[in-house]
Image (cartoon, rainbow, N blue to C red):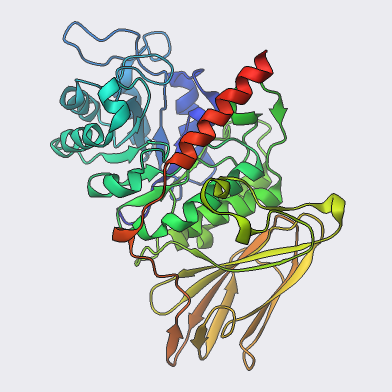
Length: 447
């Protein structure tokens, strides 16, 4: 793959309430909004299948929601010039209790290929006891089954990060989830970023860390639990930062908002249409961004330096009730032809800030005759004698992304954090502990 998948998925906005008509309206909206050259996969998540397999043990569509069957919807999406994806699990059932693929990997791969699907998301629900201890061989079996098909099917491992899929899935999958599910609030977005950043060494051309689906324009509940109250959706400022981080970290970018809504926020469409930003995801060397510099001052909730082990799952924020603080992050993404992408992120929660970055001292980037471009068309200045870049008026939780391109001369860059992926392993106990804490808190809340 030239870059991670970009598209639209049913789950974040509709969960199990999906129909053929709904999906086709979203596909048509992508075309009508002139987004199809940027987001070209339509992915049908859980709850598309019948509660029973066919007499020949094949998966089959729910006849009420998909009366024309899955091949029909695949053909219609292809007729729009788009690609189409489907969902299953390596276990016996999906997360919603419907038939999944354990024991039927080759049959299901052949069925899905025969229907004309281009993408398969494989979840981690309904596991057998054997799979609970080591799901990797079963994910690999599905990978082998997909590779045996004549049709090229992009394989996404939705393993929640708990069994360290970045270690095993890169041999056969196009992408793998790094964490448990996202939900539409900005601090959860940052949790996923903070945890996934150190996994950059495992990403390589054709095989990518998946930070989960985009929450731009999506409203929902805490932890995606139906009984919890609705939470405030992301603002425009947070949405730009969310999209920017996913793009520079080389994650798949899969939308979830209702693109066919008559009340669609066109500002969000404008944000999602930033082709210069999305092109960074497709840079030929496919190197994910790293957090290069953190500037902090004032009352933070646990400064980054204190976060190790399990605590890396917690968000880092300025705590404005105790007074103003500075919390700025500088991210860098090495690009082809000695170019560099630089993201300035005002993670603090209280003030608009001007952020000055020394290319030589802060980023260890030395390059003559630079062309500087801001992909968000924000205010900035660049001093080519001092090699200083200043991002102006960066809003709290806001960011901007620069592309530094040398027009001539010799460049050097020593700012990449070099980590040997072969000797680097994340302790999955922190995620297991997090899940246990969630379930314990759930019991207390219910009682």
